[in-house]
Length: 211
Image (cartoon, rainbow, N blue to C red):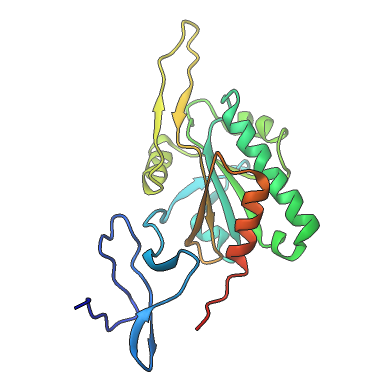
């Protein structure tokens, strides 16, 4: 017999991996709230964080409440993958502007530096010039960045330094899509094309439960 849940706070078989599933009361009892993730529910990633923007202002996860966000972790000296992913999200934003302008207005793309030792505010300002103007660029103290990355289960590892002190940072290549409440709505991988992401974004933002 299945586990009986009598509260809207929900239940998860493994809270470290899956977020607590929200439940709704029906005439038949309590049932999992239908969402775009299907029966398994949302992965338990994300959470409160605080960083600074290019003007040095404090920015937290609460700063984006009411907006859907596309969050990417990278670093300014990344030679190819980060720029490619950033350009891809820029194409997503441009496509949404043409085809779904109302949805586009509700979305905020965010870049978080995982290399705060080198990604100063000036370095990020220069880096930002090459990408879509709607991006918000964030950084912080190493401890802040590491704490946030841990909440998103981001893998990152500093490679060996070259003789001139340069180095790369290996890291996860994922774009995290959040809804207007800050909850994770989807995750987009490197293999996805801009058109794939646009399709998923529209699907998530227009999802209506059938009950």
